[in-house]
Image (tube, rainbow, N blue to C red; front, top):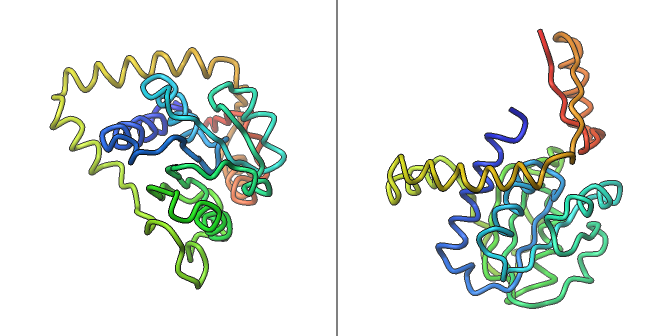
Amino acid sequence: MIFGPLFRTGFLIEYFLRGADWFGAEQLVVTSASSKTAIGLASVARQSSPGVKRIGLTSPGNVAFVAASGLYDEVLAYDDIDRLAVVRSVAVDFAGNADVLGRIHRHFEDALAHSALVGATHIEARSTFGGAEPLPGPKPALFFAPDHAVAFFKAHGAEEGGRLVAAAWREFLKAADGTIAIERLPGLEAARTVFTTMLAGQIDPAKGIVIEP
């Protein structure tokens, strides 16, 4: 319930990038690396594209959690973006943080082969990607999962497509086992509190919160 829909988006992102031969990139740079969709993407990339190095960027408080998942080859805090090797790369931005995205583009410049925008976990900074100045490198492109899902199932059919997703899902569940603890909370008031806490970026990524009626 917690990982399922988000995993499928991660699966489709990897499928799209692999279909484009990763735009010739050697490494994948993922923001908001502790998010469920990012974890799903990292898992599928490890399964299907092991030759592409997986780098997770996250807030300092989440570095240990992301590293412990074992799904990334390297985990860095956002302040350490300048430590990334400048080789041909693709970036997948789940954070929607204008400053972070701008720093990634300015760090890699023409070495950045593709820049995908998926969601916005940093609500306060989602309105203007990269700031007022034009970003070096490729123009960030929105990844719209429903369109990619239609293309995926058109290419493989419902039965084979379902089999491919299920196989990747089973491997992901093995990797994700034990990474989060389920916390059950009752009622709408709890839902309201959790929602506002999440917007403030104060939810522990090691918790999977279920609101019960």
